[in-house]
Amino acid sequence: MAGNASCLFLIFNHDLTPVQREAARRELGVVRFEPLPPHLARRWGQIPPDLAELSPFLAPFREWLAQQARPGDLVLIQGDPGAVCLMVDHARQQGLTPVYATTRRVSREEPQPDGSVRTQRVFEHQRFRRYGD
Image (cartoon, rainbow, N blue to C red):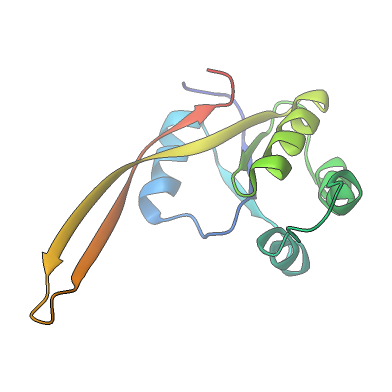
């Protein structure tokens, strides 16, 4: 999925790993990464589960993209399913390309001497995928 976009806007709760950064450069043609400002990153990570409607809560994210992104830019969107759905729709309406990261999950269980089981999960980045592909 080679792309011509130069900027990848990051709307998710983690930092990109070096492997993900390299994959974004290679697969998507990204030359610049634009993370959420700290106040929006905190907001994205704490979406209240009791909200009846998410759209007003997401207004600052829509405004941030409107001020910063240009048509053709990419937006990595992951997190609360409802918020993701709304932001993917918004990104498309603005001429942006929403993507998400796929991972391979490897799980290992180790029985412990006390009878409990310790589970270790490793997530390995595989690729970026456009929403809808």
